[in-house]
Length: 293
Image (tube, rainbow, N blue to C red):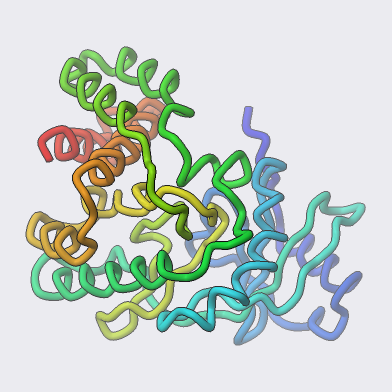
């Protein structure tokens, strides 16, 4: 049984009346793709309301409110701008946020070819900018961001269990061999900022170019490898090479990145009720591609 709250427009309206009455008469409607960790609603023409869907995501709110305004001036790409923070209430149990609305289309619309090659350069530049920002006192990777930027060993048991569960559907021997290599690599560099969920679904484009990066709930400070998985989960082969060259990371960092991509694809596939579905096929393709990389 899911522990996620079903949050309705009426709940958002009541929270606004209670805490931000000046905005309480603005139109409210759910966004088309609300995400997993949060429920998101349009608020008027230029705002959005974002509410954690479960207790384990609640710590993300105050973290984003604190750090996004500090990161934004250091980046040439737009990121979410907090406008206000809501308090826990009798009708909703956690802190929640109001942000400025960012126009753009989900990056998943980008097709292989020159557009994707250009996109690969843009996202590499963004990550390099993010990693170059002073990370002093930043939130170390841990439970608050599901250990993105920390050691892959956190997910060792879960990954191996998934490989066993999928032994009839994937090359389990190669998957296990790769995983063992990945967890043997230890990051010894300086801790840098990581987005933590750097996927096409959290990137916006306008006129085919990178416009914004959103959803920093998994923001943290640590090993940059977790932000490289987009190389296999979205980019085509040519764009992957461009991205890799632009990022200019060492082989061990790319090995750990493959580990992050493998873990996510494995647990996503195991969780599907219909593994023969198109979603299952996508995850199997990612697993095969990561193993072959």
